[in-house]
Each structure stands twice: as C-alpha cells, then as structure tokens.
Image (cartoon, rainbow, N blue to C red; front, side, top):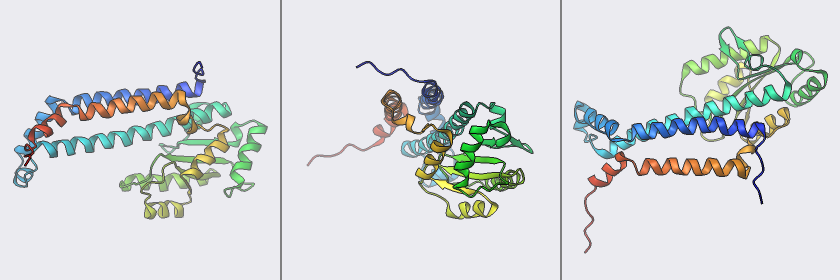
Length: 261
C-alpha cells in the first residue's frame, strides 16, 4: 500500500522537528568528538576541586556531556511545542502570527485568540470551549501559555508568568496554562501561578483542550505512521551516534579488564 501523502500541518511539523534533529546531530558530533572531549578532560584534570575528588576521569566527562545534551533536548522540545500550536491556531482561525503571539509590555504570549479577530462562527466555537473552563460573557478571548514539561527552577521565569497573568486578565482574556507532559510537576510553582490567575491543564487535559479548540489533534500527528516512523528512526540513529562517539569509547578504554576465573 502506498504511503499517504503528508498534509500541510504534518509537513510543517516534520520540518520543525527536522530542524531540531539536525541541531542535535551537530551538537553530538561536536560535543562528543575528540576535540571537545580532550578540552573537557583537561579542564577537570587542572581543577583543584574535581581533581581532588577523582572526577577528572572519562566517566565524569561523559556525565557532563550527557547533562548538556539533556538540557538541549529539553530546550528544543520546548521550542517545538511552542511553535506548532501557534501555526495550527493561526491556520485554524485565519489570523496572522503577530496576532497569535500577542505582546504585552515586551512579554510575548504563546497564543492569544481575541474574539474581535474571529468571524462569528469561530467566536461561538471558542466561546463554547472556554465556557467549560470558567469564561463569562465579559471574556474577550483566551490567552494561552504552553510548556511541554513543567519543572521550573528559574524564579525570573515564574515572575514573568505571574506578570503575564495580570496582563492577560486585564485584557479580559481567559488565562489558560497548558502542560503536555505530566512528569515531575512542581506543585509549589503551579500553586503560585494558579493564585496569579492561570487555569492549569496538564497531560491529556491539555491535549484535549487544544484538540477541541483548534479542531486538530496536532499531538496526534506524532502517532501517524508517516510521521512517527521518520522521527523514531532519526532519534534512534542520533542516540546510537552518542554511544558510538569518541567520548564513550574513552570510557570503555578506561574500564579494567574483567578476569574470568
């Protein structure tokens, strides 16, 4: 059976992910290569703290490099989950990227949908969805912040979210905060932002909200074979590249030979 042709949203999704996968590949090739590995080990050997605690070794170099890789994955996933919903929202309601990503005093909202920018039918649709989450007749639309995961350790980020809640509410927009992953939620941070006015939807609730609001399950795109198979193969190749890298080979060389009795 011939593979189904990708629709515009699927192609846009793959293009966005492909861009970030290329970035990860370049990072792996650089960070886990000989030059970066040698520099990192040299810094540890010459450091008075790490040297004293015997962290000047190949194993700890890899730990540091993997930590950076994990941070990079998190950042790029965040970018993907920010940009794709914006694209879907703009396409669904026929509004410009600038109107979707509205700015308040220099702070950019992930998604803003004002009734004044929508046609009559779309206004009725958005209003019916928002009514389920506390919107009233005075609500002028919705202001949405999106995180693929939520485990903030940046107090400045939290202060901006608190400030954004004030701007969104002052504009009459319903403040909705979506977290697509339910792993490691920070209950104290969520409590603080809830008190500031945000309505939190996590995991399936977040996914269901955007599917109903936009009329498109953009997260479900990831499960379509035409998209899933490409992404999974690319990521598997990327992971193999890490474990076949120069840095990991140095760890293998540093391990003592196992004696067989």
